Amino acid sequence: MNQSPQQLYLDLLKKALSFALWDEPPVPAEAFSYRRGPLRRKALRLASKALARSRYRLVEERGFSRQQREDGMIWPGQADTMIGRKRLDNLHECIETVLRDGVPGDIIETGVWRGGACILARGVLAAHGDTARRVFVADSFEGLPKPEADKHPADSGDTHHVHKFLAVSQEQVAANFEKYGLLDAQVVFLKGWFKDTLPTAPIDRLAVMRLDGDMYSSTIDALDNLYPKLSSGGFCIIDDYALEGCKKAVTDYREKHGIGDDLITVDWTGAYWRKS
Image 1 (cartoon, rainbow, N blue to C red):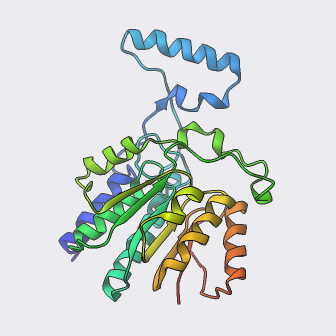
Image 2 (cartoon, rainbow, N blue to C red):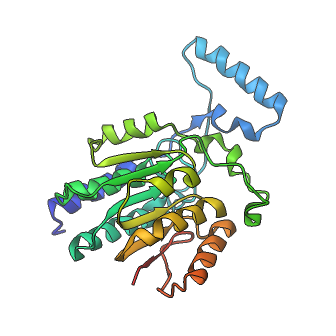
């Protein structure tokens, strides 16, 4: 095996964050009730309340394969990340590369859900004894914005904003950091829409930026405000390249700024490049 204690710790951290050590449990039936019609939602709400009085819970069994979970193709019930093992490994590798090569700058993720990828980033820094770099945790902590189709036509018809499952509070994300022993002064929260928080974020330089905003607007706002701060030799990671809005934002930005660095595929939706 010949793995160092640091690598053993980080491997275990990734397994814990992705809930890979356990079977995917049923989720509360109300978690996805917004997908049902109004009558079914009401019946489900009443049934759940009645059961709760007797300390029971109504849950929904979800038949996902281990491969789907490892590939980050589901919205998990218990995991602290939904990005899958390959994208976790990619983030891990990118951070260790900038540490090894001395690339200056902090780390940021825009769109964090339950915070799993940011927790891994902080864990990598801790494992390597880096006490200077910060991990910026940028999110509205209220879900995704409604599309502004007049401003960003590529977001026309986008429905991410209706998915309440994607809204995780800052308090819950902070609690998730804390349960792994990784909540400290090197973790910086940026709460709000990216168009409002990123232009004035207290960031001088970045070594790794990971964009997980799903939409054109969220992706282009992050690129416009953060990419100029990315150090040469740093990494720009795109989580949602399989989504047309996100892909178009990346393509538009790279073409506008003449970025010719190779865009490398991570898995079915992840991609990244290293800034030359």
